[in-house]
Image 1: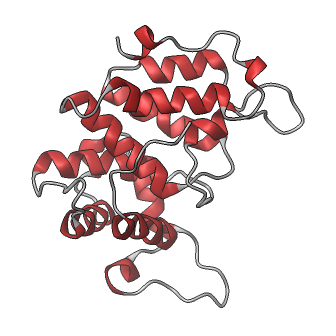
Image 2: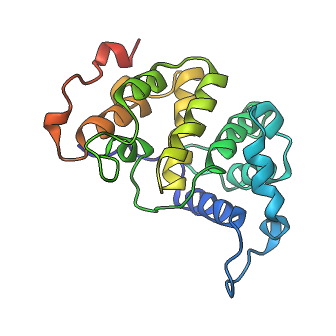
Amino acid sequence: MKGRRPNLDAHQRQWVHQWWWALQPPERGAARPEGLLASFDRGTRARLRRLADPVDLSSEPATLVLAERLIRKGGDRWPLADEPATYLRLAFVAGILARVKRDHADGRTLALHLGQAAQGSDRRVMSETRFKRLQSTRDPSELFLQLQRAVQLVEATDVAQLADDLLTWQAERYLSFGRGSDSVRFHWAYDYYLSSGDRSAARDPVSGKELNS
């Protein structure tokens, strides 16, 4: 099955990659970011990781840098409104991206990595019980906490894809955005259970009724 069509355009996704990279410790001999990203230092990522509430994250300089450029780049498919609610949703994204260990720019979802077998084990990186809990969580604070823990379970994921998924997930919840079969939750369930190639492992897939409840 084809992946979900992204809502962030190529320029916005590139900016997410650049923003995440600027948060990382500098490598010896590597060129450092310029412009707005040049102000990021060792404490920037630490502050983003320390704050446990998107409301607090929304006033962080690094969050505002991420949000302002994404809003200004505004893709034709999904322009982001320059309003407080957008900054809050992007703060949610910033707090999750700051915990990603390595950017694996392969266009794959976090859920696919969570559904793969852990190294040296036949168990998935995230248990099915925890994944179902993540999928069914409605409380924004609890969802934020669970997603922070989820990204820490994987060695790498595509930060631009994750940003797109997280923004779309929030839009689907609050703005009646898209259809059930196009939803992030549907595509994450598909990737978690079926995209590893071991379809026999999907003994009890999430039902459409559960996904859209």
